[in-house]
Structures are given as C-alpha cells and as structure tokens.
Image (cartoon, rainbow, N blue to C red; front, side, top):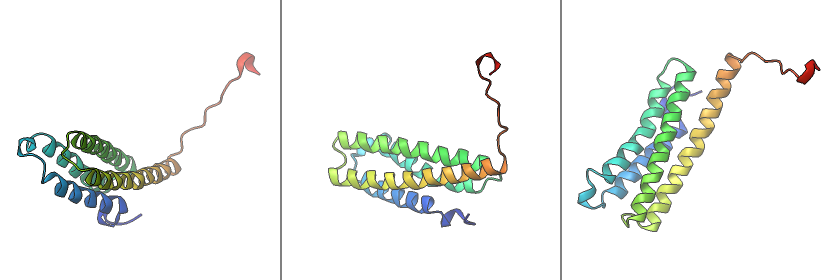
Length: 137
C-alpha cells in the first residue's frame, strides 16, 4: 500500500477527471451556474476528496466506506454529464472524453475497494457457519 493518497492511481485519475469537468463546464450557460454546473463540479470534487479522506482514516473498514462514497459521487457525476449532453451543453466529443475518464476512475476505484476489502477479510475472517441439510442429513 502506498503511504500518501497522492500516490494512489485512483486519486490521480480522479484529479484529472475533476480538471476536465471544470474545463468542460466553463462553457455551460450562465443560467446553470447554480444548477447543473455546480452539481457536476461538486460531485466530481467529491471523488478525489473522499479517496484522500479515506486514506487518512485509521481503519481499513472506514477507508472502504470512503472509497464507496467516492464511487457513488463518480456515478452521480456520470449521470450529470449525461444530462449535460442531453441538454446540448456538452458536445459528443467532450462527453466521450469525460465518460472515458470517469470509467477509468471507476475501474481503478473498484480494484482498490476489492483489494482493501480482501485485506480486511484476511485480518478479520468471518466465522464459518454450518449449513444444515433437511432432516439432519
């Protein structure tokens, strides 16, 4: 595991995604400043922020919770960029770029979640339960 959240590929890609979101939303209509522009920016900023905050937590379980929050924020941002495309605020090319960046963040984030969950399970295995067959067989 890396020592700093800045070393995490998920955080680095999320930061790239946020930067691209800000660039693309700069051309949104002024009437959306407090609407969709604000929403998609906040959701995208939440992704690397939650990755960083989770990395700073003491337990791996808390870390996973924050990574899952980051994933939820990523899905929120993906939905909002689709809305922006549907409203004509994003060109197909800009949408494709943002969507691929989001997908890249998602893949790495999912891998990180699985890796941390495996560490947690290895450190704290669940007790095995016996499965009883019908009629006690």
